Image (tube, rainbow, N blue to C red; front, side, top):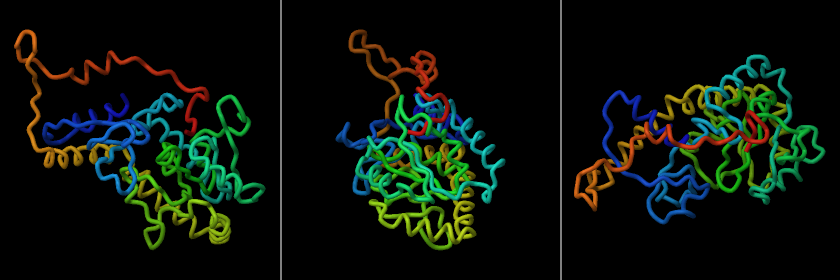
Length: 295
């Protein structure tokens, strides 16, 4: 429902008419696991060109983990950043989560960061370890936020990029719609990239904690690039409109918005309007943690 809402906002706010299209949407963490055709999906490996990338539901609402809306979380994160300037943030690298997803990556992270003065890494699972729980906005009180993939892409990644902090990520296997905008080096560097086994994490942290001005500059560029520009609701809508236009150019046919009723032979609308669907859809309940639980 949240993904459809993103698409509806992009269509309804378009300054010009968009072409009619038909598409298959997979909301599986592994889109190619659930479909063998060309599909829209939240993530893909580099060679999975049959998946057209779209922003995931978290850009609208992730009520299952207590995020009522993307804009609500943005307000909380902005409040944390406003009250905690860079120099007052903890100089540690923070991570909370469970090693259940992608254990080879996450268990290795826990091992590498154990007893390190520069790391604040804790296991948190539902019903356990709740003394270590941090909401997503509280992650922004740290100068460094650690990103880990899960079953595939990480649903929390975009939220970490909203912080005025340095995102530290292992080399990614799965792309999202804005992954190509990440810069690991050079004058436009907007995150710190390390190996998937975290073997160079300690060396990277030692370098940046001893070069705080460089780290602060990376955090500032990241915030300007993602939080203030490419991950905003306006940018997400713009991306979906351009995706729609690109899809229309290659789909090879003009969709018929109507269909013939097999019994009566009458010509009727295909499917139901979004407005009717949205008011009849059952509502999810918030997750165990309340607001802003990391996934």
